Length: 275
Image 1: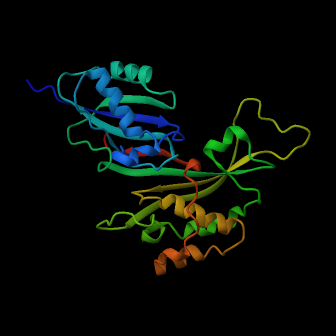
Image 2: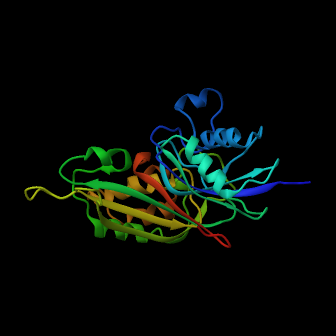
Image 3: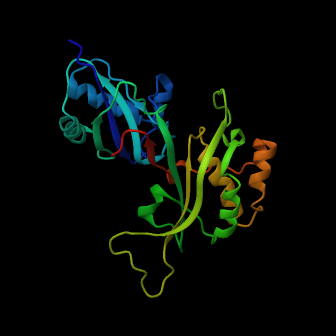
């Protein structure tokens, strides 16, 4: 009797201590454990299956975090109740990786290929100093950023474009680097943290959030956009440069790649399944 069952996980993790999502082999593993490999090892421990392969909706880079990563895997020996897997994973995984949900999915479900949309946000910290508890999750920028100029720059990204200039240098060749951005927005977010009240009229700490929703993203694409957008926000280049980069596809015009610690994979949408 074939007891093969496909499951999907909804995951949240702090990526600080990890080399990224993808399992690393050989010398590459010296960069630290991977999210994928850590969860696979835990699944093998729970289920006693020799091989469990976890497929993520995307491959987050070293230090990048997730609030809504989705992954799927197949178990072949027996059927497991979702609540058992959910409880077992969270009892054995490191505290910086949490499972938010487990569900059975159809056999043709694929965490990456079945995804309709993904949402990433990049967070710039604004305030009088870099607040310690926000440092692992945002990028402190001393200069006050020009949000209208940043939004004007982001508006050029909307729609379908070849985003190859924003892709990481040396990334593997793809059949197509054309992607579609559905939403691109800059917003100023208050920091909702217990006891966080400005004292004695001090300047409040806020987060400038760059939120992108698209049908897909290239390797380090969001970080390349964030680094370019920072230069716009600091007044070092005009918003129209983003349009020029897309038109010329000149990688040399892209700003520095922004640090991974401020990037979050926040949500993935699918047809037919919801959390």
